Length: 142
Image (cartoon, rainbow, N blue to C red; front, side, top):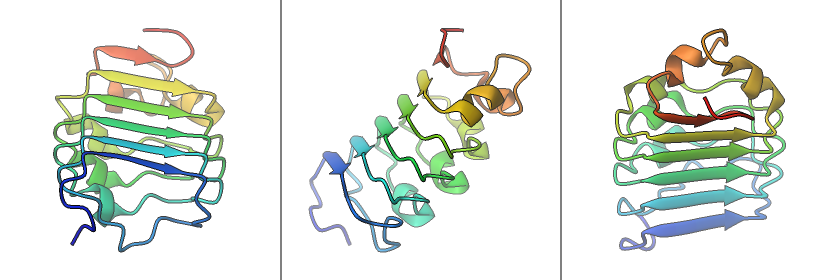
């Protein structure tokens, strides 16, 4: 049960969490989620993010130890329009769930060297997961 059921915008900044607690259940009415400068975060919990069906914008930046995003949880973000990932050097791939997000219109990847390589247009290992997105910025606009 979310602590603030009507919350539509949430900024998690400079938290000391090693990973977001599995009990992290933000409001199902959340439209904007920003995870910024959480240096110790390694994983975003599947069950917390997967309930955010109204989420329109997800921004994750300055999380130097983040290694993965939830696969199935990301696939349930049916209202997600914008995804921005920056300065997450250990993030090595995008989740398969991005393939089914028809509402995703903009993807921006900055200063994530492994991810940048995997998302290269037509040749990257993750390109097939994001090829349907109209606006992609991965160092250059495609």
